[in-house]
Length: 429
Ligand SMILES: Cc1cc2nc3c(=O)[nH]c(=O)nc-3n(C[C@H](O)[C@H](O)[C@H](O)COP(=O)(O)O)c2cc1C
Image 1 (cartoon, rainbow, N blue to C red):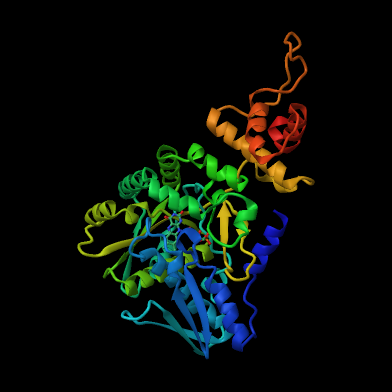
Image 2 (cartoon, rainbow, N blue to C red):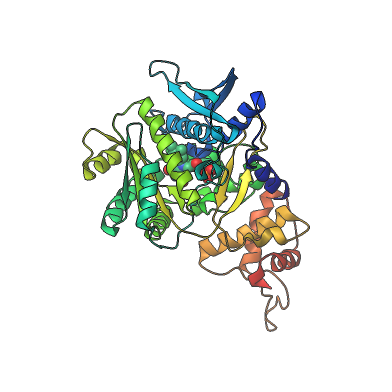
């Protein structure tokens, strides 16, 4: 986990004012890649020109199951565009994006000399992240709702802020319907797994979704892929989403006037402004797009919200919560900007342990899985005096560790597992 925090810090360092020329463009690209993007595929390429940055779609990174028409891909490019627009004034530039609807999907951002200013939204760019943990339920004050509403509309995109519980619950029901369809679709699961990163090492590899960011365990990659079906199901996901929504005082639904690439880009820009403004106000947010990703459910959502021909683009919940740890990032070379946030897990004090970090991390996460699967706390008691295994380690949790570690080639005696588990999991001490 060590190199990982430094990497996050490097990618998320603030923009240094006073730079110009190519360095300024490169730094603006770094800031662009801090934008939200679907499945963290970073399906974009950047080309630097004379006073311009071009953002090109990278169709090799499409996600055809969850995003068959590339709506999310273009919305993600829009979010990256918005970061450049917001960040340019830090460097004394003003940014003007252009999009040719009949072209190859590129967005050209022209940069000209402008006023030097750092707005709260620009300052929020390196801090903005999705927070998928439950929130604390506190209502957002009216004045802040108005500020969010102003930030999150424009360019043919409207923003509906739902803050009344019946209105939130009606959309939540559709999110659950969409999630149920997706979680029961093997092709969706395969695509999701392709982009999931289970271990710290994988998360550093440069793209994809770090499983910890969704509250799932950090595991060695092969184990994570093999066990995914054990710790994730439609039921468990739906329960998690319902709890998350119940903890959120509001939902934001972004709706575009027309269903075309220009408006998908505009929707991504509108989301990014909303998210930056929320971050500046200390408000957390996370996407719940299941109801706009499944066409049949999206249709029902549009009818429910009386949208007519307009497309509901994106759904975001928002509210207040504890500060999240920034837990992963790419090395910042070819594909910078892979960053995810994770809800704090009860076993995440692992960073404090010195010595054999990967194994200790693994034990702690196995403890969490054991608890999730069995409903019992992981135990390390030894055989009782009257038993034949008197004083010996070998209870169910130790057996679980032994069985799960076998494919990894990490052989340890039951006593050694017990000793290590007791040093890693505070509850076992
Ligand atoms: C168009 C779009 C759709 C997204 N859909 C979802 C979603 O349905 N569920 C989710 O948890 N995150 C979703 N995300 C968030 C991305 O997973 C997230 O932005 C990415 O992993 C980078 O992490 P960060 O936003 O915390 O920096 C979406 C992002 C975008 C731009």
